[in-house]
Image (cartoon, rainbow, N blue to C red; front, top):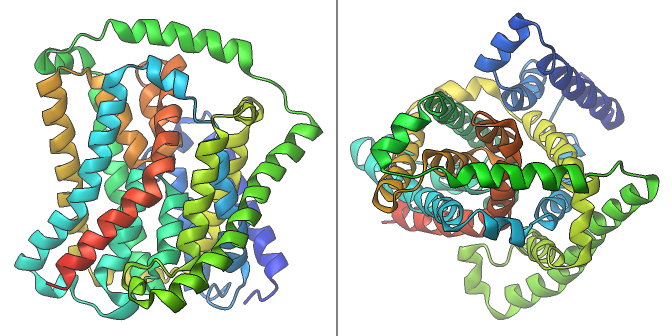
Length: 411
């Protein structure tokens, strides 16, 4: 067993590099492999295999506590920093409407799915303390509204057990990837689907041309000083959030102990909430231009390191212990899908906005850009813009959904 955290971190980085390298290879074999096993899944599960077979010890390692306290808040800031409100407004009401409807579907879908499965199979949703099912499902809410960073934030707030979280990650990734496959497949029939939705998609071409021009005129090759600026913004905001959380948390714990039930005495809740707020505020300042030198890309690097350190705590043998959790995930996704399809039909919103907004919720910036690019490569940034909005509201929306699931579990 590898005990040295420096050695383990080096191993995790090599694993991430190999996953990204092989995923970028043009050979059909690799392309076919990654169409079945997406890179994000491997970044979770390869470290999980190493832990399950005793090669590393995730429970004893200090990598996750360090990464979750420093790199997670930093990546939340770097993701939300690039919020381009002007560009979002140019997408028109349909994109924002579908994004918010999709988020609402996730927020209410979890509690509804938990209630349905609980009535049919009470043993599936049983659990006390860290093994309470709602605690694990809270992390899915964060993931499906925002992304992996929001998921980890809510994991730290509600603290599901490692065994439960291993099962939840499987539900999260597999259900989300199935839905992504449906959305990409639907892109090939967008014209027919738009006819069913009675939607006019002519305006999307105008958006495509605008985004192509913006990308060509604003992208820059980052210099050393740009990376220093990015580190200063990400880690500086993290430091401010830690400082304020150390003041807020003891005050609430002492004067309002009843708030512990809502996790409002959790320092990590305040850290992630504050850095997200800081990122949103900074998006209205000239610092937003740091997105042009790779703010979200550096945030993605931090996120994948985080994903690998989460994976190294998994016991993959526990994943098959509660297959009923997949029923919750599927019902949850069906509620989300049914709601956005209904609203798109009522408001005559094109399938492009339906698909990209949904994936910006469920999959985050990487997979949302893939779905958008299935319509046209220059539209990939639409997925990123909407996913940034998801990152901004993911922790808050997931927290609200978690409170409703907690209430249902205690009924």
